[in-house]
Image 1 (spheres, one colour):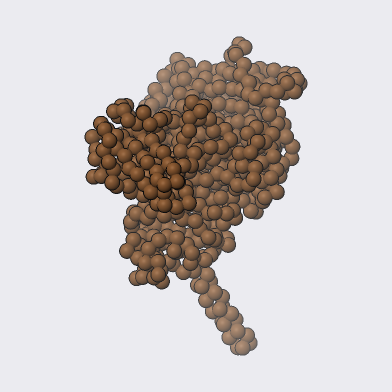
Image 2 (cartoon, rainbow, N blue to C red; image 1 turned 90 degrees about the horizontal axis):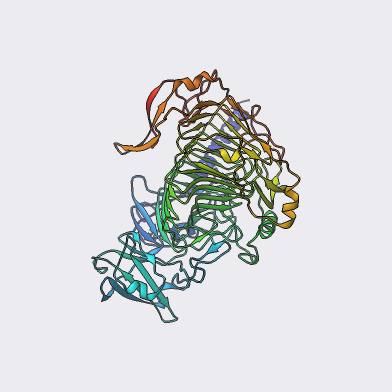
Length: 639
């Protein structure tokens, strides 16, 4: 027995030792380091890439305060959640990683215009002033205009690309300064406007690198990137049918954590959770049929829960991106995007296309988008194709052209506990959606029918079960609060059932009504026009509504002591209408996939908490996103 005990103790000691070894090595990087060093705290590397070349699964790379001008291309990832490779800023230290370089030796030409000539060898293999923005669903404005992935920055703020040389030679006018460039095999000449500034005395930077943190191949898994400021990248347009590069991106991998970073000034995309590249990129794929082919190839290339997706993007600030703050075609599946601040997306409107939003996802299967603050964007969230099982919850939207767009999805999709304060709350070209406990203050546009055949899946899976057209309807609005400009009249009739239950309408809000409005249609084919005839238009149903249209809820978002405060006048009379918790059992299944509304892990759904996680009354939950029992002016801190 004594011998057995000794062996047992030895085994425990060996196990403890093995666990200790699995913690891995910590490498340090500092501006005064040297890449020939060992990477210890006392002998740090100078570049992050030097540490990346050494790091193995379980290792940590700690980067110390300073500015690093390099492109990080991680050569490997971790093995699992327990054996990640972690890239992190040292605690309490500001670490900036830039895709740009400082340019001096500017020559004054005339007025506000200066010129710099950069030898071609400075750019290496990539010159963003030769590289043009291109791709499916990218629409130059006007059509024949050329845009480059380069940019010029004055003291951290970017200038806009001029349409031609003559434009940049004029005196600076308006809010935006301009730049223009021409490149040949010898040098790149950049002309830029610097109003009331000497660029040789200020900090002037230009894009040099396509990305800041991005693997050069797929399946580099389980990486954490935490605590950095990453900015100024020459990213290209990122359509759903091609490789999607971001300033930082996962490149068709699994299990990344991108947290506590500032990601800003990317020519097109800030964070990409998107697609890999292949020979079909932007090659006869700009159509619904083309994207179905893209999906089939992605399935063959590992699009499944075991291999791709399941990322966490949290607590980041993402700003100043002219296509999207976060983008992802299929590679976003099973991910969580939470507690981010996303703003100034597609705000310059220099070019346009069909892929711009604060968050633009294709194939957002079981994706949770929660707790985000999204403002000053053309669209807040745009879920396009295959958002099956997606949840958009507890987000704050304001000052957007449109808060939420759901396009050609079949559901089930849950939208709950959101505060939507923009003038347009919703654009719907999907079925299978449930809207619960939201505050809507803007108009809603509804597409009656779209003939595109788009996929639905087996539950909690990427496996495509079938394709289906997109008749309007199959929508449930339950326990919402409609105020000011909220208008649901376009859902008065639809080709599939529309149900309103337990909602409150205050002054300015418009409910369903027995009139025939103007119909809007999505993409239509001749065959689609015939198929549409199979559906019979039906009136929406409204029950248990509180029509308090004489009551002014006075909703407004104000800045008070550096905090965003929602003012709303509450009427406790709204609680006289009894309501129940919204659950899997209380919601009708999504019709096309014939699937229930449930949590992303397949467990039963129950909306028993409010916007802030406060427990809702089981006896009679309040309408809208906040559990409030009193009356009068409420001041709710939102950020």
